[in-house]
Structures are given as C-alpha cells and as structure tokens.
Length: 610
Image (cartoon, rainbow, N blue to C red):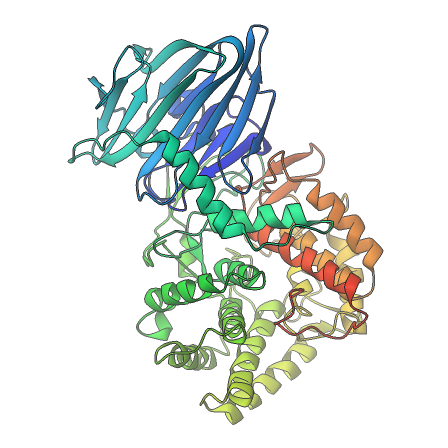
C-alpha cells in the first residue's frame, strides 16, 4: 500500500522526476520524460505495480530526511540498533541521461541494508525479461548489473548482486562506517546497448553545483524566504530542460477525493499554469526562462490561432487523448487511473489573458519582441475577438455546461488591456482603437452581468448566485482594486460560502456546476489567493495568520500537493503541484510589499506582489 501523499519527496533532473517515500521506496517514476509510461507505479496500486526500496533490514520509516542545500538531492538518515546510514538519492543534472542514483553511506556501526526492486514498465502492464550481467569496469561481488527489457524500454541496475524472488529482485548487504555502496538505475531504449556506469562522485558534485548556480541570486531572508526558495526550485524542477515546457505536476491520478473518480493526469503543460509559473520566476529574476518559454509557446501554438489549445505535451504535442489504465487500481483504490487529459479540447477564455499577461511581464523585464512574438499576440487577440460570444469551461475546466464565467471574461478583458498597453506604452503596432472599444465593452458587460447587486458580490458566472475563489484574481489583473467595495463584498461572500476549516474551496460542488460526482477538498492555491487579497486590502494580520498556516502544511521537505484534507490533515491530489507553489510565491511577495510599502493602491504587473 502506498504512503500518505505528504510522505513523498521529489527527486528529478528537469526531464522527469521520482517520488521517494519515507520508507525508502521509489513508488513513482516515469522514464525518460515526465509524461512517459511508468517504470515504478506502486503509488497508484501497491508493491506489485513497481517500486525500488532501499532501507535497513527490519526498518519501515526513516529517522529524518532533507535536501542537500538548494538541490533535489535527497539525504535520508536511518538510525538502527546496530548503527546509522545515510541514503543519498538523486537524478543527476546536465548529462542528458536518465539515471537514478542511490548511494548508501555508512555513518557509524554496521547496518544490514535490504534492496528490493520490482520493475513494471508501461503502467505495470509489462513484466520485463531480466538477465544478469557484469557492470562495465566493475570488480568484486558488489559490481553486478541487472538488465530488464520490455518493448521499447530497458533499464540497467548496477550495484550488489540481485537475486530473483517472487517476480522481483532482492539483495541484502552490509554497510560499515566510512563505507559507500552505490546503486544506479539507468533507462535506455531497448534497441541500444546499455550506457556505461556514471561517475557517481562527479554526478553528486555537478548536480549540487547546477542547482546552486540556478538559485544563487535568490533572497535568503524574510519570514517566508525558505518556503519561497523551495517553491521556486520546485517550479524549476517541473520545467523541462530542453523544451522549456512546464508540467503542472509530475504525477497522474492522485485523487481530489479519496475513493472517488476526480483523478486527472497533470503531466502536461497547461498554458495557464505555465504562464503563471513564468511570471513567478520572472519576478524573482529568472528572465532567461521567459525567452525559453516564449519560444516553446511559439512552437506549440504555431499555425492558425483558432487551433490554440489550453494544454500541450512537453514538446508541444497537441493530441492528449484521455484513457483509463486497467492495470492500475489507483491510489488507495481511487479509480480510474487516467493517462492523457480530455480537457485539452476545451475552450477556456481565461487562458488567453494569462498568456498575454506573461508575455507583457517578459516585455517589461527587457525581453524584446521579435518578428514572430508580437504578431502572435495580435493573432491571439484576433482569435479572442472572433470568439467573444462563446461560452467557456472556465479556469477549473468544468465538464458540465459551458457558461459565461466571470473570471474568464475578466481575463479576456485583461488580454485586450495588455495589447492596448503594448501599443500605447511600448510603441508596438496594432488596432488599438478597436481593442479599447472591446475592452471597455467587456468591463460594462462584467459589471452588469457578473456582479450581483443584491448579494453585493461578483458571481461565478453570469446570472448565477454562487461565488468562486477564482474571483480573487480580479484585483491581481487590475480589473478592480482590492479595497473596492465590490471586491470587499465578494471576499465576504467567499469567506461565508467557501471556507472549510479556514481554507478555501474552489467553488461549491453541491451546485452541480462541474458536472461531476463527489466532493473535493480545499484547493491550496485559492487560499494563497486569499492571502494576497488580505495583504492588498489592508488585512495584514489576517494575511500573516493564513500564510503561516498554509506554509505549515508543506511536508518535511517543503512540498505541497494540490489540495488539503482538513479533517484528516493530509495532502490530496497530484504532487508537487506547480499551481500551489507559484501561488505561495505570489502570496509571500504580496505580504512583503504590503509590509514594506505604505502605498496601498492597485499594483502593476512589474511589482513582485502580483
């Protein structure tokens, strides 16, 4: 049975990632990309569905663990009656290989260590053919290689000799103080020979140096500095090194409701999430990522703007058909497990606003427009204009009836607002007079149909009476001031209707708006939006109180999932979740600005609080 979601730590190489449990088991790993079929999928079933466990014989939970500095090298300490060991888990950076290294270091005494390996390719549908070999250049009993092959996939596992046992492989070895035993798994295409053994010492050094260089200019002080730092590192870890595509999470089908069917594949690039991630990175000085992501965007949406999707594959792949995996029973029985995401065919108007806001942010930070990037933005605005009367599925990708969602309409307003500023303030060309008419018409429409005078609040969709946590983004895009009476009334309604044990739901599922069965838990990004709103509207004490609680929900290595179960105090949903971490960064920035500055006026996008 898999562990609680918060008991997993991430290791990764910016191509893919693995989840390592406090029991020493890697229960989730897709090779060689985030969206590849799994090699270990015990997370979505049990040990039979693939795992790689390394721990002292008889132990079931580590003593403690931490990351090595700013890296994603995981240091796990195990203290037993006979001694102490440290397991160093990492996926090396910079080598363009798919390696997982598990180094066992003896600290004191002598510890018997057990390694159990169960390889199950293709979402546990393929039991590989396995053969023993000798590791190139290896000597002694500890230098063996096991090669597993099934279809297009193959891995070589080097280290102590593994013996077959119940369709798995097992080894037991002793590690004394000062001794080191290296276990290395390398994926390679099955039609090629196994790659050579990596230099583990060099991998450790180079990986730490890579992450240290990337994080070197991050601020190191402030109440939430550590949480912001780790969150920005998570966002980078979820960004593909070659394509610059940013996945929403490295997992699929971790449930939004345990035992339910709200289980989705997040291993793709949502334009919204990627745009927001990019803004968070840029506002902390990572301008280079802006140009790389913009190039990814240009490649992904090349062609007719009418064909723009809300999400793509890591390399810009357009077809992401959703199917159910019969070979995996789901996390704690939460079925089905899904691969692909049917929402890629939806129309979501808010996405265009997020794209335009991110590209505007890049422009403000000095990333110049080229002969393709600005014409692309003009074409996007033309596409939005042609679809102004089209209902959409909203920011939450509802699978119910499309509607005129207020937040989506405000994001369309923001898209035209960005285009207007590009012409008026940055001397770019475009039909600015027409854009201004459209923008102003949208504002009048939103105020007439998206604001309920009797409730004194903006509403989820035109003509409705429900509120939605996404309405908290309206001040962030400059549509309304945070302390405007209309916004304050909206906050009151949101606090009344959507708070559950002090944390925010996205919306009331009882309304039936999403067309799905079952319940869900508070959505962490929404609570971080409420922190921003509090900070921007003068409720700084409330902002700190809620922020302290949210930061405290991160697990022992600083990771956040999508949602949080307040009753059972556990993480819920895919993890680690980019949306949660980028919202943390923006909330901390808002508090910092509200604390330092006396100006409480509306924020512009160049301010780190937005």
